[in-house]
Image 1 (cartoon, rainbow, N blue to C red):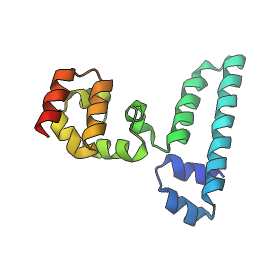
Image 2: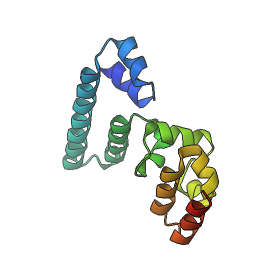
Image 3: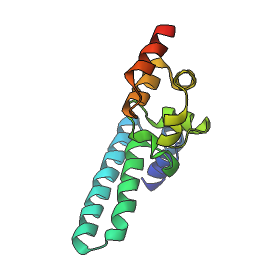
Image 4: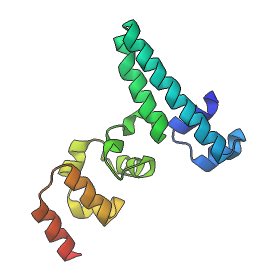
Length: 139
């Protein structure tokens, strides 16, 4: 189970994990669900026992288990519509933070993640509706 989870949070593809570790899709999902529950329980115990320094790391790990990403992608997967694949794609285009996404032109962003996701990202980051409307009219 530990190797399956390690592969998942290190962004191995689901197909690779299934064949390499000999698990079915349902088993993978069950193991991830159980890991999520255990991490939640650990963070609650850490809170009760006063291990506050562990809580942040446990919460990060829990998000990584949920989304199957390395720690470097955590800022990007906070966005609605951005999962592990889109986050990695953004990161590989040197868009590593929400600030990077704020700065990039909508047209360039749409070439990376598609029009609707690009508009959604910009909306979530507070870009004005006028700019989005102009962009959509051009398309």
